[in-house]
Image (cartoon, rainbow, N blue to C red; front, side):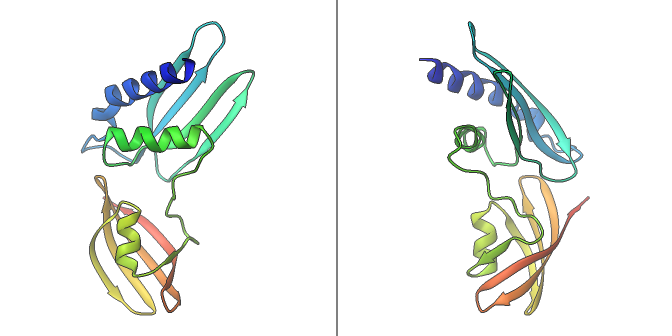
Length: 158
């Protein structure tokens, strides 16, 4: 019963914060910053913070679960599902950070991560302009195999 109540509270708070998360004029990458405590009464605190880069944290202290989670999904439902899996320890979102390798056609691999590719050029060094949510990125990949690319640099474009 407590799990169903927790799921309901998280979904409700994400829906309430969705306008702030998806705001056009935001500065930075939105993250959910929260704490969950059980005990006698279930308590869920959830806020939005904006950071220059992705942060992903989860730790337990004195019976309270604290977390920071990137909120760059395309819908409140997708964000809830991703957050719930993370809180259960069933997976972490695949964050595109320098050093990450992508396999297969680069455009397709980026689309699977939620990016819309606007422009791509190059062969051994590939420059990409892409959008995820409302944030635009300029990325540089190095071809490290026949169908493998490693992210070398990623910058937000204002």
